[in-house]
Length: 243
Image (spheres, helix red, strand yellow):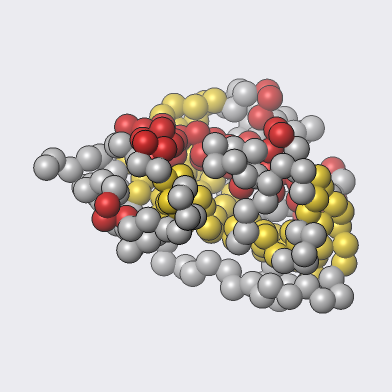
């Protein structure tokens, strides 16, 4: 069996709808572009959402780290490239970057799993993951942030009721929409002062239409802050270290 190409490069552009009040690509738009390019590549190597649906599976992301070196300008032409790493038993890694004239503007490292629709248990990667050339770049060897799940005495940030527009093909809240809802707890002035350069995120529990999640924050030694999203039972469904 021939090996599939582990990477895909696509020319993109920062459209006005992707930008914030400063005419810079917003952080959620950067993550949306990552998902779009990842989806295009996954489709091309037989592990896209439709192919997995035929196998009774669906993708979930458990961890994402986004590093921002420079946010793209409105209508700036970009080169976006995504690539997969060799898979573990039940997880795989996908990386992504956007560049301009050789300058890296943003980089994403992400960990994924495929769940079985019948019982929501993870599928074994060997059953469907492609044999690839794995030639573009080695994994980022910096570990993901370690964040505790207890938010006792944390400062409240706000609440968000999950709506129909937040739901993706898996039937739950899309991971980028946690980021949108979290950033919406801050004013434009606060976000500008924070000047976010890195987001280290964990997606722990699935949330669904009609649920209300509560965002809280706590201090962090290695970041501006750590934010948690709690469901009505008080369980943490989303974690983010904001740097």
